[in-house]
Image 1 (cartoon, rainbow, N blue to C red):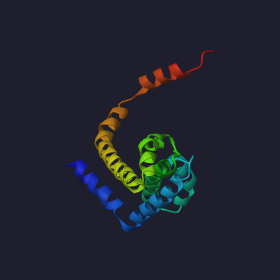
Image 2 (image 1 turned 60 degrees about the vertical axis):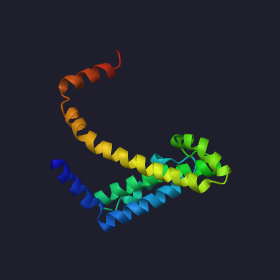
Image 3 (image 1 turned 45 degrees about the horizontal axis):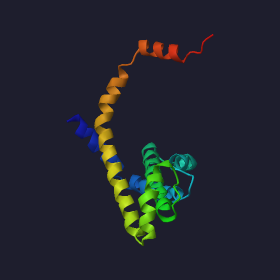
Image 4 (image 1 turned 120 degrees about the vertical axis):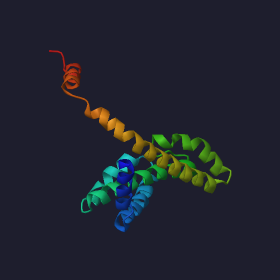
Length: 158
């Protein structure tokens, strides 16, 4: 029951109008930057990080997530239309997407990429919601013995 309570709190914060606006702006700008070949989602987030300095922490994180998802989808646009992958994740899209665009079916190819991106993003977030609590409980059980072993293996021989 505690999980549903936290989920409700998260949705109540994320669905505030100002946060939805930041998400829209992030996805829009992320898509524009993602279309540029060579600038992937991480580069887009790094370049646009200063735009979030004046925002609240929640709005900043939501905007950065929007930039990431927009840049991921923007990379598929250049892969489908001009056969130039913007980042490594868009290489596979070049194989079938560009072939569909050459046959005059660029619109359906972009639509399939958009729906696939939405479905995969939604399923991964749902999986993360269920996997994060047990994973964090496991990580909290690490203590000094693991830290000592970690430092032994990383220590350079003298």
